[in-house]
Length: 233
Image 1 (cartoon, rainbow, N blue to C red):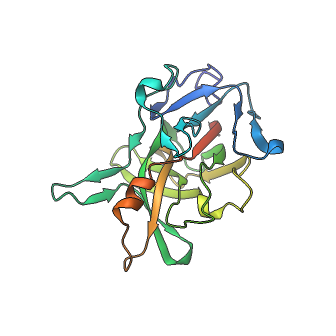
Image 2: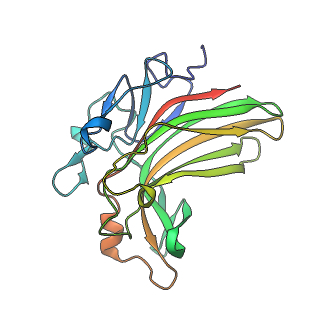
Image 3: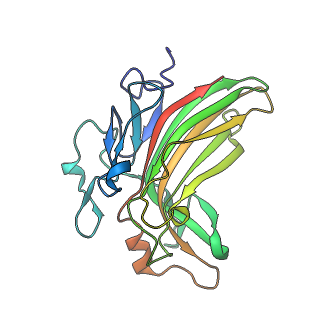
């Protein structure tokens, strides 16, 4: 257990963490229905919340200002997952396919990263629960998501990417996925950088690019991701 796979140290020791994240013993997702509201870890005493969706100012869902974010979070600000070029054009770090032929682009959020040496057939298991901060019922142009990247640390090559979930995939009336597992078996021996990302996003088509209002709204009502464990076997 020295590797802190289940956050059993109560800290982010051995992890690189960006954004509004912290290690917790339980989490109450206030907008979820009562039966599913209280979240607890299943494999230990601690879990991590990435981009805590509770850190908003009601009723517009704008992120709480940094000076109001408690000191036990990894960072006061979300991490930017879009870049501005010299031309002023915004380039998202992530683009993922979305239902209806749309593309969802990243805006801001949080991520957790850990580097491990893998052998052939080494297995990675991550237990997660995606907590949405806004419904897509009335606006499918706003779409948050969570994904996992497995990167070869030696040459920065992306070995595997898996989208865990998107806001538009969650049935109406639900505000979280519940606990689920991601598993992956390594095809080779290498030093792997495992990055777990949760992100505010917006959806568009090539014929209907995002508006300025949409880009602004995409920063509101952030979704979060609970991580119960990141284990290698």
